Length: 354
Image (spheres, rainbow, N blue to C red):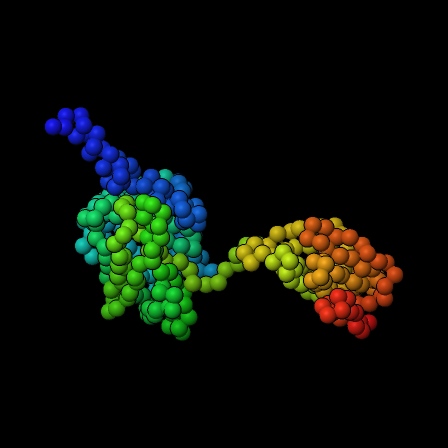
């Protein structure tokens, strides 16, 4: 026979395993999101996010080219969620959760939490100016595997259409996508990821997750985000008549120089497919209208000539991925030459210019 103390210890252990009550919902979300670096960053404490139950995008309410995503939360889980572009009524959807309990909202360091919004399920909202997501924490096998919301579309966002990826876009009267609902996905207690099914029909948004083979607790992550293209990071400044080549040995795109209508630039940047990085501010003097090619045999970017404002240049430089080296100073003085690498002969060829 087990002693009362052993029974209590076993109960506490089981509760800790399922995340039912020994951990705060926000702590469970942080733990389950850890395998996903981007999601983990979005769920970190951020006090003041839900000031007055409104999201950062609601408060900024900018109707400019990037269309901040705004949300105003209900005081209870079974209330109406207002969500859309800023806080303009003509661009706000209303979502009401089906089968939700009347759970009150509480704030935990910028995470809005509805405890037991559904059986064995906590609801946690996080947000930025461009994204609002609601995290469903499924504690055990008694939690629902599907969730639905009744949706009222506004006059200026009358259309919901599916994407090949499994997500949805919400479009304006001209058919332009303004909001996106990405394919929801789940992370289980062992860090395994699984996509959920997303569907919209006749004013009803539904999310369904196949929980077979997953370990509880499970984090399910529907979201709404802006569908307008945005710069991934602050890129190099505006310019023209610069040079750009692809460095196949290092899988990087290299950008040098150009003219910004005031100065001829001498900066070197690289693009890795996700991020621009300033690699050098020294090397060839600032210039525009030069020739640039990539020597694949020697893994070097070759630069020649150009215009510096007081005349054409005749110097030749090479970039080896770490720095510039001057190779010649007596080549032909040219602006806007054609420069290309002849792989068969392993030579860089210059043609014309002025």
